Image (cartoon, rainbow, N blue to C red; front, side, top):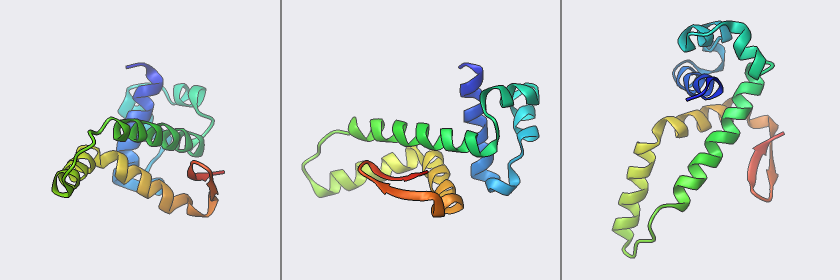
Length: 116
């Protein structure tokens, strides 16, 4: 895992637990074991980091969902979807918290609702 991926992974974990107000870039640097300046090398600020995380997380979840099998019975499909959500709960928590924090910036686009 490279430095940028480490920053994103740890920031998602912190954001999911503490929300926007509870997440500090200094805390993130400590969690990653890097200097604060390294984070700012990759991201100009917390908002840019969260926006990048939103894009990546949305893309990853979409790709994983595409890989789900086409099942015939409703029971099997429901079970598969529930398992999928539990297996990816941190991503869903992040997306929901990000949306809740930034919902006024989301606009309808052909691919869905995305922040400006």
